[in-house]
Length: 276
Ligand SMILES: O=C(O)CCC(=O)C(=O)O
Ligand SMILES: [Fe+2]
Image (cartoon, rainbow, N blue to C red; front, top):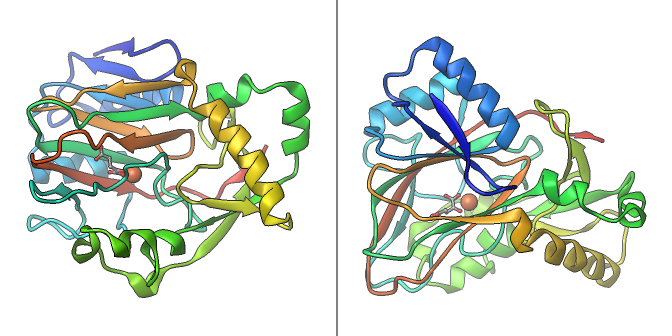
């Protein structure tokens, strides 16, 4: 198995490995690569739903998303679907999955099922690298802060998604809720300091006025979204990505109107996040 950086600060490509048939030693190597990079890309995989599930179960414990439809094949696999006729896509803005849970997801394993001819890339950002590059004054300001993460503004009764053509694809309107997490966490595996806020779910710093929060969050978001911390993955049939939700953001390009795109996602359970 070979692990090659995808871009200087964002992701790595794992080659010479079939996820479906890897042995236990390879799985351990894969864990190390996942800890080091937080974002792994795989090409030319044979990973039908039952093998997708088996890989997820070998790596960790599966956790089911509260809002997405699941696949016909398994209630443990979420469907990230955009029909030809739909305008809105799932995950079209920068976010990290499940940060609104008290115990956010460890990571997500996304498998391409139906792809548009071109477009439909997924972009990623590295929040450990972004934290390291913050000016010291800003690092000091973030010390000890906690932030509120929510899903109500997206999936609640009056949430953004309810006013789009995704609404019939989403359930769980009554399962919305918030959680608070440290703004700078120590990553449970790598031990690196990570900036843990994201545009999709973080609504404000705990105990701060909304406007003051907004100002600092926007400054942090602009910092993270810079090219040196981000990358864009072009899907091909057989592509798989596996990202760590504690140290990355992602967003799906919505640049293929009139074409269909279908992905299968399995999310893995994480652990409580500790302040750095
Ligand atoms: O469709 C994609 O590329 C990613 C969508 C997304 O946000 C997710 O699967 O968590
Ligand atoms: Fe997502």
